[in-house]
Length: 618
Image (tube, rainbow, N blue to C red; front, top):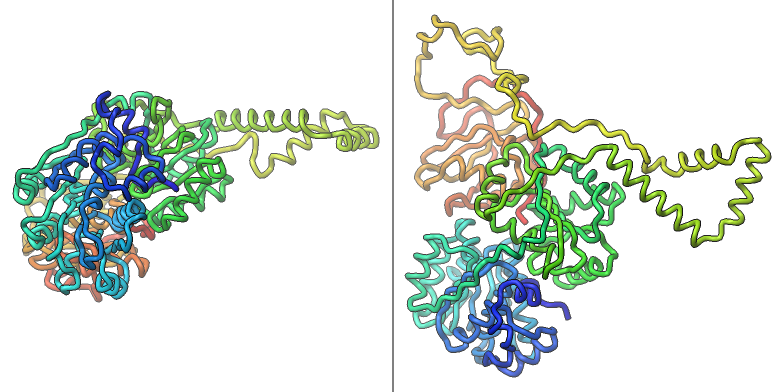
């Protein structure tokens, strides 16, 4: 049976463990016989460092603060000891696990089910948003020993009193820093305060920012701390480089890289599920063997996909961060960061899928001009300097195609019986009095029509060069307010500076021709800033920052201009997205006025046609 998603036993142990820990076996950690039986069936031999240090504390009933990277086997580190202590047939939750995302909640629940396969009557309930709550209500009413869920949906069940915590023995916060980043800190505190005071607490996090420290100090008193240091040698053998590339040219750039790079297996990381399927379709249309790996795949399909990838039936996995957790496949030679990660640590987690256990690997990062700061943040946080990768040229692509064509041709000559075809060529040459070399050239020309050996590529603009100020202003149609006939780049003369409009209050403009104005039910009173709205739209709906128009923050609500034609499913999804713990409840503003805000000024001419991608968070 395949290992649960985050259990990355062999390689993480090799990278992080000390010699004394390598001598430990799972049988030395005090786990119950049913769990040891399940571990043996899974093929686990030695605990990873986080497991070797955390399990003894948790089995003794102590609270624990664990600091370790994703992919080090954290799920088993808390699931195995807590399962050893549960009492069967109570029909009430004894273990509660909080996870930041739906995908991780499902994976953790599946891991619990796998480890508890020999515990009679064991039940686990995954609880998360976006799923029919009626099914969850039935699941909880029937009785579950372990509940794994996202903070928002768990709070819903607590308010409904459908989730009872009076028999709870342990509460686990998995990836606490990620939950903090997503704005769940208040929900977490509410849930922890609802749990019995004498329940065991465990918090696992890759980093330990101040808010997480405060939660730990308040709710995990006298907790044991286990810290697995991140070691740079996990990426020492990975050749890391980056390209500055415009967003609209990413696909062409990726195609060129796939043409010129010699790779065995590859992972291409994107931010969202919808983009993983969209990019997979485009790669398949271009002749590459690719499959999407995202949170929409159930565990059985995920395992089937990974097994195909391991056997070489698939060359490229287009994956989201959560879906690729715990993935360890020897043939992964390349990692492409198609979308740059927002978190510097996520970059290390991604590229760690290659260069495993001493093997060499290659990682390439795509950076749009607006993401240069993220690149610097990644370099600074990880104490490394990525080298610039030159854009593959048409000549390089041609060389690779010719080399591949020659290799395939020679293989056919060496392995196939070509007698009939040779006789046919000789007959054609005799009948038409044509040189055999000319006939061979014509055959090559015909065979390469679908995939030209000498491709002609339109030159891609050099995104690494910053445009001059004058160049940046070109194309912006911003008429002079005093005299609209003046060129947009010219300033008003001195006489114009003294004239001001009747009101000095800035008047928000109306949306561009290809934009619509939306109202968001969150404003100044909720602590909302424009950056919060931009972040939510970019992360949850996949809206490129450059396509987000004017944002106006009111007292109790805000407005934002977005591209016309928002897909219905994205619109419905955004209604549930939270900004500063406040649901957006986004709605389309009808007419020319934004309710509660000043009347928009006269519209300016838009400088480009905008569009909205159908993206969701991974």
